Image (cartoon, rainbow, N blue to C red):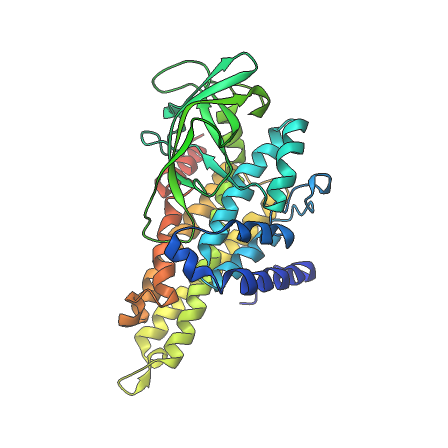
Length: 384
């Protein structure tokens, strides 16, 4: 089935993204993978190429490209080359942090943060998850105490992408002094730069996506100017909820892109690989498996494409975004598993892209809210 989704401007942007991928990422990615870290030069190069902060208005150094299809083009190029770690690192910066600044940040915050985030001079992370509070953000215990014109922030965060390489994090902290499970008005959001009292723990050794760093963060009375408060005090949890559709759409788009890339690579492999005197693709079992996978890939693309169009129109709600993420992330998990099986023993060798994709895609049903949380969100919407 032909996919008539992208237009001429997207095709031109694809050429830019592909050239950047081939020049700046492909020759160096193996080293990043070994070092568990992307260099700052990748971020500044992406900024120079116009690949960061696509939706940021021109007044703040961006291009005002609010059509999410441009972001999907980047994911497809990264997935095709098995560089998903780069795509997800950029998603944290572009789809988690930036939307909160754009929607709720003061003019001062925007002027201070948006230009360097677009240029790659400043790299950011999202510091919400804690050892005792993953999907349930009302369990967050990090606290922010007002002291004159500042807040003092103390607490611990974990599973923070860009945590070591980043310059700052968007921190969810409790501002009402409560203990236990907080209320809807207990939390606020802050842009927190690395400073005295802000430290990173050990780099976490993940099963996949090793080219991006993930770490614990510790805050010990970090002094943060009150001007770094994003929006109004007590509205942090509401802001996070309102911006969930974009974050979940980002993961659905990445999942769909990986599913397509892995399927295409598997078709090529089964046509080139021989067994018992025949091409692997000529066995009926292989053809049946590939038929099922192609159908799922194209259904997923169609579903996620519609979610992107709804987002562009401002109509993608939390339940619909959760459905797109649930479907796409669960499909890519299953698809990479079956594609690996079609590779036989070679599929288990990390030199082969399908093995790397298998490990990387396993995160997608967890990251940004687990599949169980997606089902709960959808189920509550049904029960209303």
